[in-house]
Length: 342
Image (cartoon, rainbow, N blue to C red; front, side):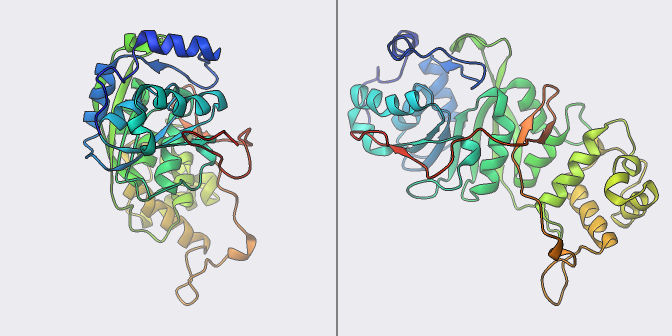
């Protein structure tokens, strides 16, 4: 299982690989490569995993964290959007630690479009997430892969604070509530800027999320998230005003809030995810869209439903729906050691 201690990538190897491949880290893809082996091992330890676990990694880049996970005995499925990096990763592994090669599969695809993964269902997600898509990728994987019991991600420090913030905290917002639908979250440690190439202009931090049962509610997740988005769209507004458009009027919103046991004059940053679930349920009841007990369908189901779209993180840290996608379509190509990329 173990390979030579120098199998992990350092600054020299990272720059050499990037130079040979003609890779220049881009802001568009949020690429910042970790080049410090000590930091990589710290991340792996922080994940609290055991050898033999099946792990998914998003954005492996040149392989720094990938090699750390393999060194610890994990089986890794790495999802990479960059075709040059996806093709090179198995080759680098075969050169530096060929004995680990049978535990790595590389999937060439945009993480936001992945709906299935090869091999056994992953039990953990460990990743240095690109800053520009960190929240939507995290929420997408928590939604689509319920086998993920444990998640450790390195993100921008500000985003880490938002993900882990409790109600009433000044950083509590849309990412906080949506992450809480799936898991409990806590910030574990800060990562220095100098372990990256290129050096980012913001601090990074690790966030650990552990799966929890989502709130017991008759409302759908999409409906609850719609209420969350509306509540935080104008943070200074009282809920009766913020939810007026969803409910049809401020008076109707106040009525639904009272039915949910929530003070209409409070604001979204004071509520838990369970509070939002009750509000969504009350709004559905009020509009006559609650599930019909005799049929199990919603009373307005014939009207159809909107296609759920991925979220994007805005500059202020809020999350909104993304319209359209430039992601590759079709089946998921795999890049495996010893085979050509399709």
